[in-house]
Image (tube, rainbow, N blue to C red; front, side):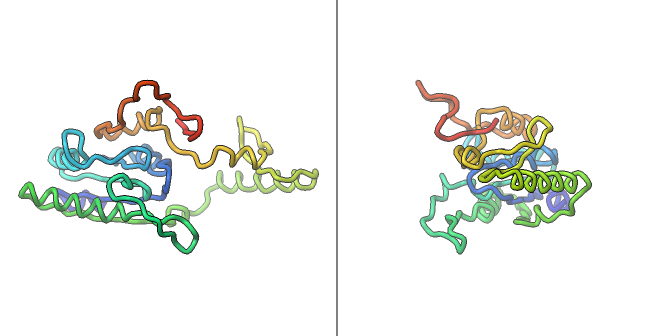
Length: 221
């Protein structure tokens, strides 16, 4: 809405959660169908050049009058650098990628002799605050009931989850063994994003001898 209401040259930037993985950003992109550019930590951001984000956004704005950008909070460390500082929770402080993209987009359009109206939105934890629907309530009830059943049966060190439409007990050590997970930039999910947004694919080709998926850094397709 922020982008379409500021035609021509209206651009909306939405920063979503995702410190080391872009799952929320990519699923928001696929679910909405309105996103023109999706930026995630698993894929390096290219700003300029034939496959650059800035020229692509300008072309998209020329075509439809506006553009929408979704960026995960952990994206862009390859161009903004990493920080050794931590926040009050002990998490590494991330570069302000949303503000950076806003400044760079405005600068790029100005260099082309044009003016872009860029609106930046950071909903943060509000995306977790939507009211529960009937399906959510049923799922949470099943999780709670089965957690109690497991505890009363004498099990410890487990979590409850839904596998193949059945509630099962999952050993916590096995759950955290492959953590943290990240999205496979050469997998089907990212291919769907590229097909949806038609943004340039900046994933570099595999190097000689390089495996498609690193077993020490589990990824999900």
